Image (cartoon, rainbow, N blue to C red; front, side, top):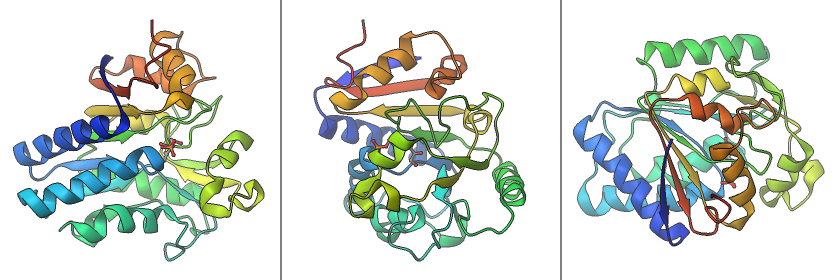
Length: 243
Ligand code: F6R
């Protein structure tokens, strides 16, 4: 893992957006793996600005999101599909049919997991995967004790994750759906390149354990230590516990 530290979240967002833009300019037919959450908001806002100001082209891009809440239809404003529309898809020229988010309403979760894995495979695999890290050490929604060999499947969210994500649900942990569909750790590790982004002091402990601790299923992020091309981008508060 290589690590890049910048003073603050704005500088990290600028750098990550530039790295993605460089990739899209070098290879317009890129398949992106996308994350949601607060860390990503600034990055997508910057990417939308690059589209507007520098004509960054998304017309040949395909995308696969990491996860979606089970029980939320795509039309629900709290769904990750709507998040993506709001922060990125509605502001760039990506073709809607090339954007993929797991179906949180699929009646058969195992079948949906297989369908999603096949769709990634059929698209030629993920070239560049964007990741955040949860306060439980999760990547995607792979909570502690997820197998490193896991694939897209239904999972139960850790109580702490529901608290972490309650803002979109009226700050009521119990209103956060208890389950989600998520790419597995092995799905994530298949990506050719990974950018792991962490900002803010609340991520400092998990980032240090993820980067410097022993590889363990207790912290899914540590699986990234085995990836040959994973770049960690952190602001100074998130990097403050790295040795
Ligand atoms: C989101 C996802 C999660 C988040 C993580 C950090 O699609 O898969 O792993 O990246 O929970 O979330 P924020 O950025 O809100 O702290």
